[in-house]
Amino acid sequence: MTRGAATLAGFGAVLLWALLALLTSLSGTVPPFQLAAMTFALGGLVGLLAMARRPGAWAAMRQPWPVWALGVGGLFGYHFLYFSALRAAPAVEASLIAYLWPLLIVIFSALLPGERLRWFHVAGAALGFAGAALIVTGGRGLALNPAHATGYGFALAAALVWAGYSVLSRRFAAVPTDIVTGFCLATSALALLCHLLLETWVTPSGAVEWLAIVALGLGPVGLAFFLWDRGVKLGDIQVLGAASYASPLLSTLVLVATGISPATWTVALACLLITAGAILASKDMLRRPVRRSARG
Image 1 (tube, rainbow, N blue to C red):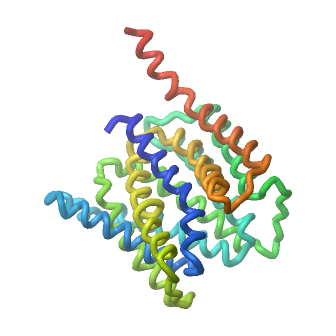
Image 2: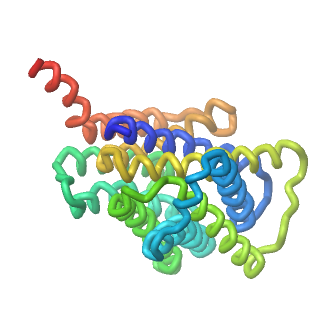
Image 3: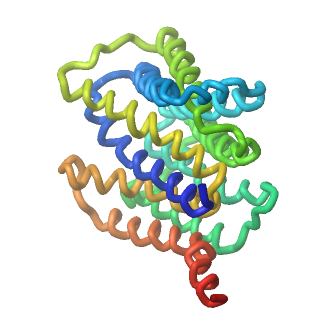
């Protein structure tokens, strides 16, 4: 897979994550750890079915413990910390702090061999964060309350964990993406344990809620993580980091299109900021074809 194709695969994950808000809202009152357990199980099941069609694919499960620690720690660790943040702090503040992960990916990528962090990568990610801030806060001011410091800490830890998982996955670029199947199943098992300890089971009501859960397991909590694995291992990680801010924007646009949320000036401004940030961060990648043709 070429660098450009892998980058597009990673952006495919961002597009799927844009459906998270809509599908989660349609899943009813299923508590978060129960929902994670159900959807990650579905994602892992789809991975198992895909592997069953390729006899040699099972060898991907035989990996050293650092690979498993990184994968399960990334998927489960992020969701555990994010859900914990929402329990201990207001959703707006917690979500905005957690959305630092794309900016952190861009910054952390400078530590990778062969990668060079340029000013336009950071500037593009910063513009994206500004756009995400408008989406999350609705253009209203943000007041951080010291009483919720624990929740803010969980949210920041969640951002650090996902950024760390995404960047460190580059170190294991040779590990087949089939391993994500194991990550999903392990995350499902750990989420189920947390559900049994912290929540009460809620049975989804009606076909719409069940279909929303299945769609979550197949897309945003299934295929998306396989695509993201390809993207961060083989693609342009700085571009992916900045472009990831399209997820909250696209998510809001989906809610607007379905009539769940109104269209506002903040959505329009956020669209401009995030789009400008993604284009700025992609400056080098967009110019490469021109350079090649000029040599020809």
